[in-house]
Image 1 (cartoon, rainbow, N blue to C red):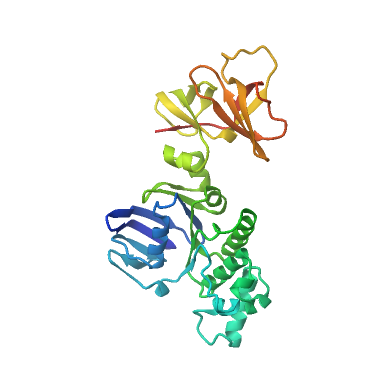
Image 2 (cartoon, rainbow, N blue to C red; image 1 turned 180 degrees about the vertical axis):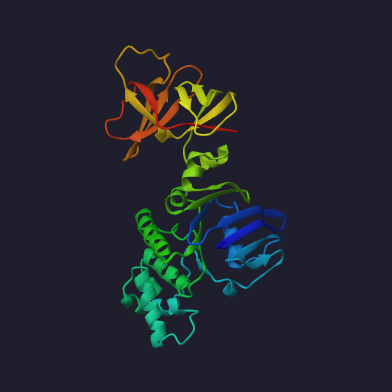
Length: 352
């Protein structure tokens, strides 16, 4: 049986009197990409620094490729862990050329034929021309600098790549393009990757596994689809996207609420509960018949927010239920004051 690329068990770290990590467990399979997502200060960067070897844990263990690299109060030096690290700003040496930056840490003389060939190969891997080797970091765009930082981290063929919010300093369009290029390189080369980010969309779009962190603990770990569609708690659900919560009564795998009878995607005990739907699961269809507002799923549009691709509709279903938010395509949506029927796509989830 193949050892995990990274196995973290019971990892704990305290700075002064503040416990930053509290018994964290996480496993990365070889060749996979895992994203740790959470708000600033939740402990995700500390986790990355412990794996890299920049800090030592107070308790717990870290194994890379089946080899113990850290335990309570001790650990291997960073350069002995077979780990690549890309920081938020790239952290390139400004006084060195791109080629010298990439070659930094490689055995042999920087200008030897073998090192120059390796630099050219790495530049090609990150979709940069060999001529970039003679440039200085300040002559590159932010996205190009991040790709050079990735090439430098890959130069020694690490078993594990650590990315510390590497795209957050880039503007929106450049961030998307750079992220796509970098993640393609990592996928193509099969390097196991641990990405730390505060961007939920980034985590869901690039990772095979997503771990949501809050106050030094994971509140949910699973595939992007699992943590988004079937989160185990309300914090995970709300952190990863907008939610619609409705009071309901569960009976035999179905929830009765103001929108009607909705099937559940996971078992839940019978009785009163809180139902969770994602706004994109709801579709508002304008109606002109004599259906009364007392019928399930009937409401009035009381607000509309145009977001380009999508539109957010605020719908009043009457009674004591707060207005419901529906996200749908912005092509010919129901107008404010229109009477609509809400249809449900897929099933719902009852949260504890």
